[in-house]
View 1: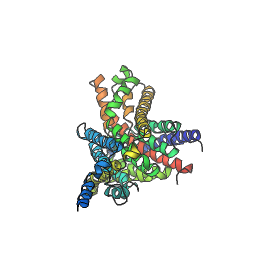
View 2: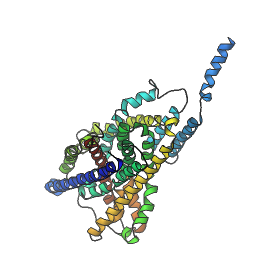
View 3: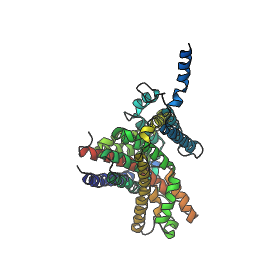
View 4: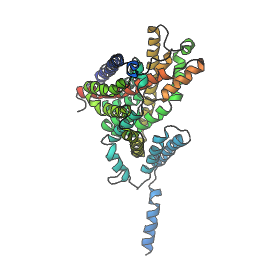
Length: 43
Length: 380
């Protein structure tokens, strides 16, 4: 594999994968925050 | 008799006779690292053992990195097999409060933007002619996360370990110097003046307990090659949040982390032998590492600006600069910069969210990178 293909693949899959994974985390944690709100547990 | 005495005396001056200019320069580099750690308080926990390890390994004839040298034994015990960075990660997980990022999960995205530097630097390193895995190890300096950089480099480019580790830890400690000029350059005074509202309420204990489990399972499924990194930091955090294994948590963040930090620092210093370290490549790596952290900051600020536009001016873009792994230093830098322009601006908790996101982001970026490399068949 040449360096150009490698670099572009790493940028697209690597950075894309990082953003996608963190976006999924943010969605899941938002959901968990709604399912288990602090106020409810506090009571 | 005379011959024996002369031979004995020869033994006492052999070390001096074998000193070459490389050893002398590296002894100077070791002293410089010690000075930075002791006098300038730049990551002293790492730079002091690294500096001393560098001095030890460059004293001729002692052969401390030889087959049976004690530095080689420590290196093989925990760096060659990547154990030390992982043990450090358990401690980091036990020390980190992810509450601010859980209270505002959108700041995970700022943690993603702070990883752009890794991939942009990787491309630059490739353009400069570095082999693929060397370029990956150089790019990972942009994670702004010492253990991650050491984990990746010790596995895929061990010959670069000294340069990459020194760059990662030195630039991490220089975040308060590197970031403010970039912040001022890329934001307007109006943007820097923005006062952000108070953070949403705190996070429930259940959410905090589920966080490490969810991240481990989902992250592990997406990027299994990076599971050691992700799993260890999340194990530390689960122990902290559960509150039922206080002894283990305390040991992870104190005794284990301290012992491992000492061994890790010495081992890294031991890789800085003059013959291997003193070459133009090292200077290029140091330059690229600096660029990586600048690019992280630039991309974080640009996403911060975009979020400001999308939120109708409610977000101060400075918090984007905190989306790197230098925790909590980057958040403190943002708070300090924000207050320079508006005394009523309290950005710390928002920046802590981005900073905790950056901590997770750097691990995820490394994990994703390793899994992509594995998918391409470049690593096993």
